[in-house]
Image (cartoon, rainbow, N blue to C red; front, side):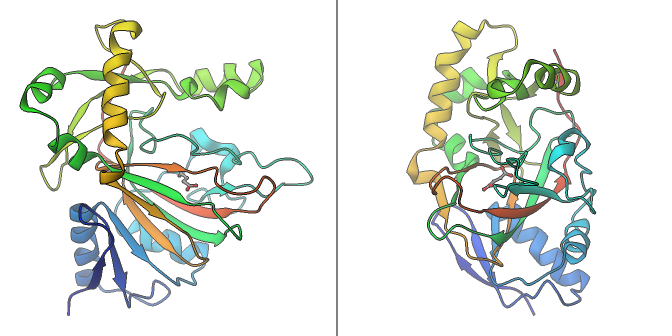
Length: 284
Ligand code: SIN
């Protein structure tokens, strides 16, 4: 029958209308969702009233799911496949994930098994704000000059989980444990999307310390230029969440950030599953 879709921007992203994730979904429909997800980078489905089991089962149709071992403090108490992004205190203590995602990134870029896609279900949203902003790294790559494409082709960026400002707030003991779990890892700066064949910038904010073979001082001006170029409003989509919204994003063609655009103490809760992509990346 085909999917009913509405475009969200002129560069990327669609809303699928009329698909209820709490009902059985046939293989042909899953194949259509897979196609549109890869082509458009972001798929939105509103008003989804689904259990964590249904969320996990739907996500599994697209590949192997991460069990979030390296992000253990953020896991759902009953489901390893669900990563909770929450500002809601637990037993009077701040939530472990209250600052998760507050910098532009592609999920798990700092691992040897980066995420193909993330499927994000809105549970609780502040009265105002709590938006997520997405940027299209394919459009950003396409709009570079031919000469710049030649310069960056073949560069590898070193992604360091501990390089983001929020990590620096953690205690020395926690940082030491995180360093054991997450060693700096080199990833190609230009990715060829395995399904569409399109090239994209594999860029992030503050996470990339340098390019392999170059010093941080030599690398940072280029990292900053490419990052600022990618988050040009021309290539972005900002989502204002409503409870029940379900967004699937492709981490090979988009980066995203959780905005701090809501009042301190406001409750915001999302469940995320993470579909693993192809293995890549080399420890440095
Ligand atoms: C994430 O980076 O997975 C979280 C995004 C968000 O909370 O909006």
